[in-house]
Image 1 (cartoon, helix red, strand yellow):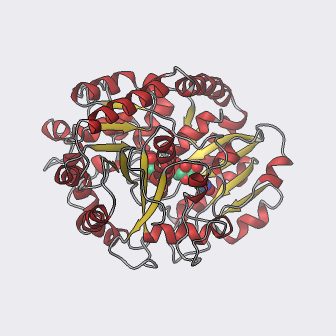
Image 2 (cartoon, rainbow, N blue to C red):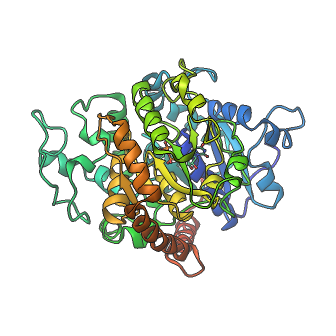
Length: 488
Ligand code: UDX
């Protein structure tokens, strides 16, 4: 590439897991690390870059290369003085392959082929001093060891979820996970730093009876690698998960540096969206304070059509104004019309359905008073930061465990129900719970509590706050570690 990394600064290779909810915090971590004096090479897959370029065409066109070809999502950041470059690697599949529809084939590539591409890239780059890679990758500790550099594992979910995966062997040993017969159903009370947790609050993959899937193999291998990481950098906040973090920290240096957001929160200096963002301001500007329900199920999970239909009935019956995000592949990329035909007609003038939006901007609009969410960790952090209480409808992976934090521990959300593998939801419940969140006593209480948690997040990021201090300490510890060795 035309700008090579500085030879005086330590050079970090930073690789996000190629999913939207991982790319967003990783890109902003990259900016933070560059601002802290590292030279950073950020790596996206060609397929992710292709999708970002399609979704953000106008934005990226401003940063076209001389040949108009290689468009660089960090060009703007670099022109503002940050030492950060952008590289692409293949993930083993053609760029236009439908990864959403063929998830398992994609996962097989991530399990078996991706590391070879990264290794080849690492060989072509100027000397690397440290590898920052998403915890879900199955190769970083091995690669870092072969390069003679530290592995910094980047964790984009709560410490509680990290700890549960990290101690999978204990869950297995006690029969709460991976039993030949049925898993135990009683409360789990033996995990370090986790006083008690119900099996129904475990991540979906730890509730599954079939533990031989490709995703399970990825998780098992990824956490073998995480056990060998040198540092854990996590998008969470010390005050929110004190005991869990302390217990992990006793085993390995754990730095809670969240919430990792773009500077200014609502707009990013880097294009990261995989889908084109619709502007929702016309509807929001016309609505009274706190009256609009924002609905989104994140970037990854699919929702069955009949479930969406129940929710649609509930939203209609609730009478609430709404902004509803439905990705083009929410049911499956072969089903572009996920909602029943009557919905738009019956709710005309009350709400809008869009494929994707600038979520942080929507959440921070004063008209938004509640968030019906799948409980993705980024969505939770953004909602709390915006002071918006939630209605929880977890679908997959960590979302059940995240629900336990927001409903059970922090009391900033109402639960809509749903458990691992059961997306069952009834229209009457949807309507009633929306009413409770938007107009009821429970909503009032959750709104009060969310202000308290928001001030914890704000305090953590302020100068001298826990996340600022942890980030500075991490930078110091890493620089100290890399200055004691020669980069490869
Ligand atoms: C999954 C996991 O559940 C989550 O915990 C993990 O951290 C990432 O992968 P995902 O479905 O991606 O989650 O949801 P979430 O973590 O909430 O991330 C979605 C991101 O997309 C958020 O940053 C959100 O602001 C953004 N988004 C979503 C938009 O910008 N526009 C939209 O319309 C919807």
